[in-house]
Image (cartoon, rainbow, N blue to C red; front, side, top):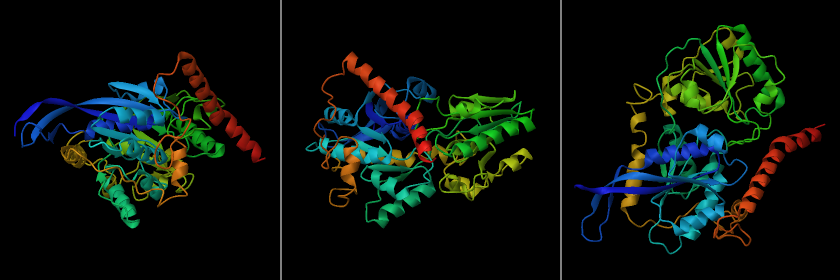
Length: 456
């Protein structure tokens, strides 16, 4: 069946943080089919259409809305990118015709959008294929997060292990599990590991793991101590954000503030930037439980998940039990290098091919998702969105989830919700920026002080 002229598939990504924007945009590019079948009004037989992608990005306004610097660091480009409220986005989706919509949000945001979209698309015979998933390792609130994502046409699982767990949760509550589709993390890849000169140790910091000042100071002291014990090595503290910026999780005690009080050795540096570029010069990646560990393992870089603070669900490092990567700073100071377990790594969807960036199963990891989306696009008409949570199944939970995004229990905008009929005036834009800055200052600076005072 010969292909017709190329057609641009219109893809929208709604994200609520820098990390989720990166995941959503990269996922959109990987799951969008290069060719799909559409029905033709002029002939009885369908036709095959070659496609490219037009990507429109929407950033959900909130505490973690990424700054221009964070977006530049992510390095993912879109044909358009703008900031919206939930209600503004829903009104945009009611007016525009997209082929694919990726919801790169926290679970409650996904659920609110599913109900809001179901209301906005009432009476429409055609709607986009709705896709959602997780930005990284799923180590907490598995049932809660999954059921909040139920109702999307495609729920992406980043590994074989996650796909099995996701289906078990949905089937266990009597919900349709056919949406679960196995893929991999979309930002894996890069050059295979080669030794660097000088040997470089990178600690991948996390905004909220661990939380306490005591634990974060301990990790910083051990990292600095490692630099002093190994002056021939370069030791880097890879930071996620600058003070005042927010990521997916709130960082109340930034490492850079703790480091200001330390006498840092010459071979110790704080670095920002794209994680992939940092991994290009990494010989040993150390973390508590960051998704960066999976990026590192995919490249065959020696990777350590720390046990110093215990192996605990609260830290997320319990996810790496069986990986062969668990070790302590004492072991690292003595020269230990981990040997990852091949079967464990394979079940996580990383280091799956002969080379990190090609061959093997990672090169085909998104084929199933593309095939599923191709089939959904070919149907022409999709059924209404049907989340597991409804006013009948969760009458004491769902209304609160929707209200946080100014939506009523039926998915309609609540009275007084922000309007999207016109662009905000320059004065309103200034007020919004000031209010957001004040909110971030309150969350990151004032709230921790109040909490500490309460503990006295």
